[in-house]
Length: 95
Image (cartoon, rainbow, N blue to C red; front, side, top):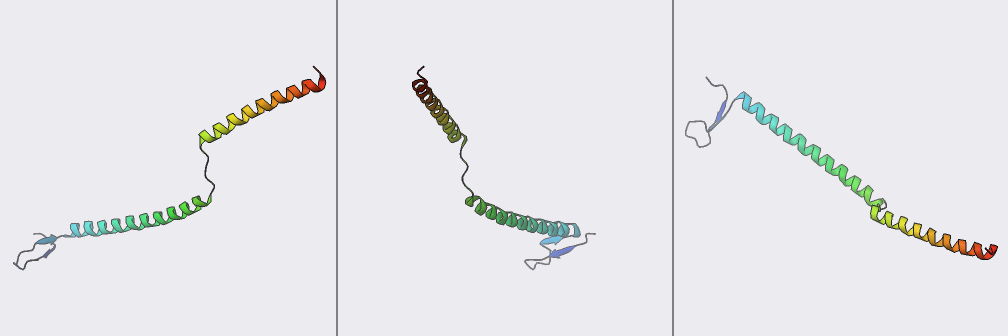
């Protein structure tokens, strides 16, 4: 003997949908699970929006290529200035 609730949708006297205790628990648990997941995702979206706004206010990070180009430029500039300084010292000290 099955214990549960039958729902007759078309009024023919036979239940079209039958819910027992196990099915009801699964349905309620599924609804709670989906609701909690939705709430968590909504909260995470709000947190991410705040973090995006904070990140927009920060200065942009420079890429590694740009930094390497600047280093190479400065090394070349130092080398050029060093050679120039050596020439000036040679003129001053008459080497």
